[in-house]
Length: 95
Image (cartoon, rainbow, N blue to C red; front, side, top):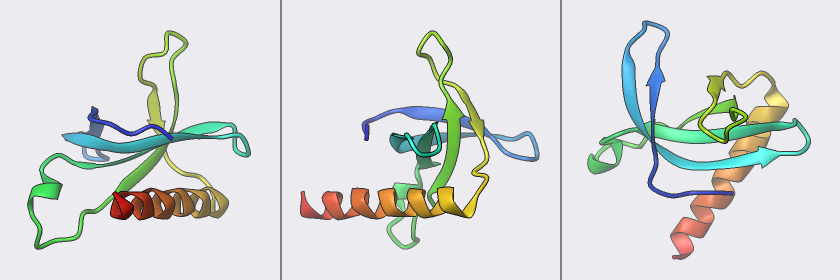
């Protein structure tokens, strides 16, 4: 699992670009995919609201650069992502 200060630009279904902070990325041998969890830039500055975390799968380009985001396709993938997120948040609380 990788985490750190990284930003990505996400284009929504209306074609609007939104800058997002990457929470963390991980790979799944089971689904043979990589996943990224992210949230809109600035969302963590407003303590009155819960941060909405988004997740997508992605296939990194062969040159190692960022890949294209794909929607999560199955309930099993969502279960895996939720488990990874809970593990990540538990570790963050401990620090």
